[in-house]
Image 1: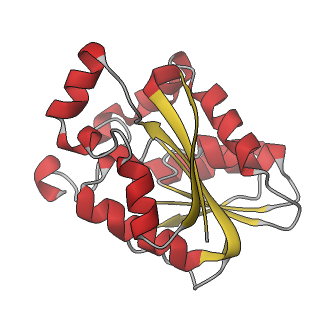
Image 2: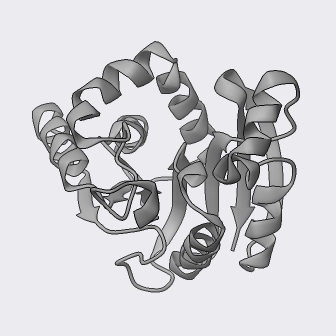
Length: 209
């Protein structure tokens, strides 16, 4: 991914570091908080569960999950130190005991079988095919038997102008059709399901270990 962005080997939340302050208001205007809430609802987190969000950015999803499930242990991981700094400040101001770690989805800094749920929102389409496969393999590794991945992203069967755009962009194209479920199965995940479709051309997915 280094060729995608000259400053980093990952994609910052708004594409460039200097635009990071715009990230939260931008996602709020797009209605992303409602999508986050729905993803957490679908994850069916239980008391005592250890829940990891990969690509947590400024922490909005994982902090919402902690508010909805204060009896669970919440962890967010992201490669961007600037976004993580903002996430930690938010958690501290809100008094939310969420842990934030620096790391990549394809190299998760957690032991085998250490998570009950893994969440991912609007991160997957930033990865190329090899990174998608590495990330899913790592997710399977850290999930406990019976654990689940809940993922939402720009994906699915879309037509018209946006569908043409997906075909032109290799990262979005990888998400089209059955691209995500096929990669989940290829990583050894089971009970793969394609769920609701909604705002922002989003599709919800679920898979289990």
